[in-house]
Amino acid sequence: MRKVERKRLGDLLYETGMITKEQLEWGIKEQHRTNKKIGEILVEQGIITDKDILGALEFQLGIPHMDLEKYTIDYKIASKVPESIARRYTVIAVGIDGDKLKVAMKDPLDMFALDDLKLSTKMEIIPLIALGGEIENLIHQTYTSAKTKNIVFEVERQLQEEAHKQVREEVDETAENAPMIQLVNNFLQRAILKGASDLHIEPFEHYVRVRYRVDGQLHEMEKVKKEMLNAITTRIKILSSLDIAERRLPQDGRMTKQASVGQVDLRISILPTIYGEKTVIRFIYRKGSNLALQDLGFHPEDFKKVENLLKNPHGIILVTGPTGSGKSTTLSAALSALNNDHINIVTVEDPVENMIEGINQVAVHTKIGLTFANCLRSILRQDPDVIMVGEMRDSETSSIAIRAAITGHLVLSTLHTNDAASSIARLIDMGTETFMVGAAVKGIISQRLVRKVCPNCRIKHTVTATEELIYKIKEGTPVYSPRGCSVCNHTGYKGRIAVHEVLVVDNILQEAIAGGSLNTDEIKEKAVQRGMRSLWDNAYYNVLKGHTTMEEMLRIAYEQ
Image (tube, rainbow, N blue to C red):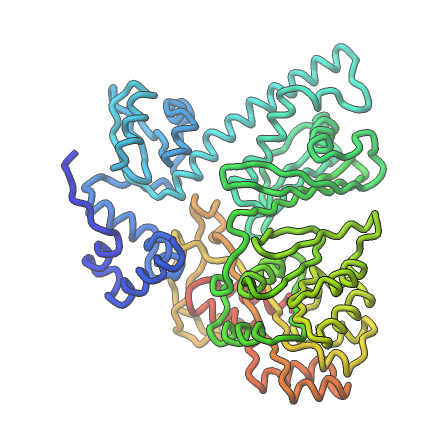
């Protein structure tokens, strides 16, 4: 291998004409601000693709690249490299040439990786360069799937032995055997590696289906025999300290798991169905959950509005949207922006999802009477400057929160409503006087999550006449469509981004709300007249920026 003088990636991209000088300077500034790699930043903004980076590195290093997008790996070859080394260095064995092993690598100049590969395989290494995301997906598919099949086979074998001995009891003893422990751990690890938000274990008449949710969509992981259900459920109950003997009533629990991505909190929900107990596990990732406001995808105009709202010394700011729309993340970002040594911030949540240094966080415990309303009463005696209420669920909680906002506290909370304007009606329906709502509410942020089009495989095309009629985007406008590759699990989408509408309650809207003269549609119309960008407008903006697709924008319209 020839010795290569390595240049910085940004300089290389600029020299090859892939980015402009202005884009390079902007990328360097963002790199210092976010501590991300410049290539990652430029890909996220749609300026270049992962394949552009691959081509630039191939040109610089003189090492052949390998397109793993539709590559099927032979496990016998891949297993030449131990899984721990493959994951540590993001490498995978793809072929054998005599006594040499061809290895696709994210960084083929990593001498530590090359030395470890030689020592572990006892073979000469031929390095090839490939996309890190594609390698990680193949590692996951090759090693983890093989491991799952072996564990499932072992569990089935033991269940058959138990059946022959006729010693299986109602509470399945196989939940304590090693293969079952490995199987449950395997399900959890695979879901976490995929970045799943939820794991579903669903019983049917003849089988059990295991699915995970990524970017809002469910994907099948595995189907196992129905006989394994009791053992799987019992193992999960043991891990989350639930009653293993109770199978007739729903149960909720929690546990914590240490994973490669850091500490993950798991929320367990078990529901009896006609074919057995269904389990749903929600994953809350501590690492990376506390994002800054500027990283949440606000339109520049809306970002300034939110910054100004948080400067209010008192009043209430609401974040609204359906379940799973990222409300807690937005609230955490707002609290982080407010957090300093000179103010007292107290939160009441159910449960505490994002732990923030320097903020007093209280978890609701309804079984012992520690409700949102009771917590709020006590918090008001704690000399708070800022109060965050996880959710306004009832009239008592909303009444106390609004009174706190009127009496000199800044209150942040969430509501389950379709848009910003309907939040006003919801508060009034909960029994709050219209004049108090008008006086207390300073702003409402409504949001949805849309899937980001995969930067690795997205296809650029221009809007057709038919699409103009459907999506209201001018014919000939360049946009992106999903295609599907191994990086995005062949969905065409990778990750999600929030779209918002920010309603600022100014003096004119305040008077109209307090007077009770406007319905929801009239409030929305008046807010738009006064500069509010709707959810549709912001989804439209993200389509034009290349972050998402027209289909995702249309989905936002149907959800409103």
